[in-house]
Length: 91
Image: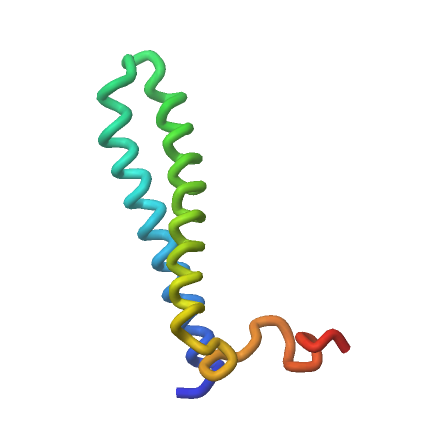
């Protein structure tokens, strides 16, 4: 496999991971919070749970990404997403 294909797989895998983490956060928060609120305010709580699950997934995703970045040499296995080396060196 070449660097471009590795980059594509990494982006696809990271996207799937982010969606799964968001869904898990949403389901967990939904199961915990919805039974505790009255029926009349559940629509507002549902929207709040949705937003909180997205924010929580961003934090979890960043932690997982930092762990991966510590273990994997990104330059060795992946191509830059935006431009080549001249773009990254500030030219």
